[in-house]
Length: 265
Image (cartoon, rainbow, N blue to C red; front, top):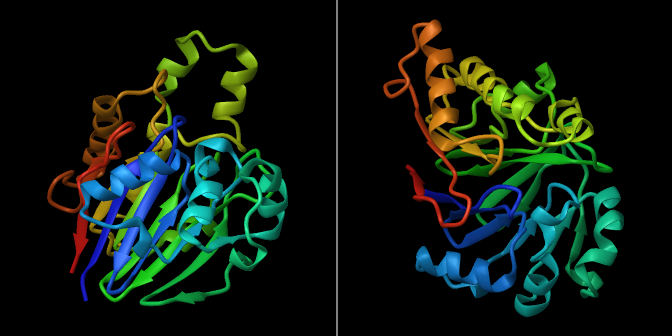
């Protein structure tokens, strides 16, 4: 059966990724309010009552601000590691404990027509993770909010048919911009975010491993531009003789709107 994936929102103002296959659909994060999520899903002609669950990457508000209301309104289960759940407990309000499912990295979980696992990443939170979701049409990986690229991370993403990969900032824009020094250090540090160049390196390393779609995600409003992110990736790939358009589709997740859905067949 085919799968449909889509970024509903992306960036420091809020993040949510939609994955659907067969009779099962889930969100990776819900960093915008419930009304915004419902409207984004309506753009896809999808009723939020049909959601099967939410997978949570970490406790920052731009990833969980809508989790509590969605869980309460739709009796929607959440899947989260224990450290992150304890860190976000006071932020999401009271929800039925029966809706909380504690997960651990590298273990596979089955949710209807989907299966998923999480893997460790590097960010300034208690236990940040990325997710790899198995569909009958191929795997989908979501990896944002990580400061470094390791061999273990690349192995976790390797062979995914579609990857949402962070491209948070342009190096020059960040360093010459108005952010205070401590914030620049945080963003560019090992527990911060990936730059356009970092993202390009990930794509270069994985583009021949079966990935058909890369979605540049979590772009900074102040330190990046969609055109600059795609240009950086294009230039890095061309240096290795890789065709930007021929070898894989590369797009940018929109900040304030529902991105174009990707269908995996």
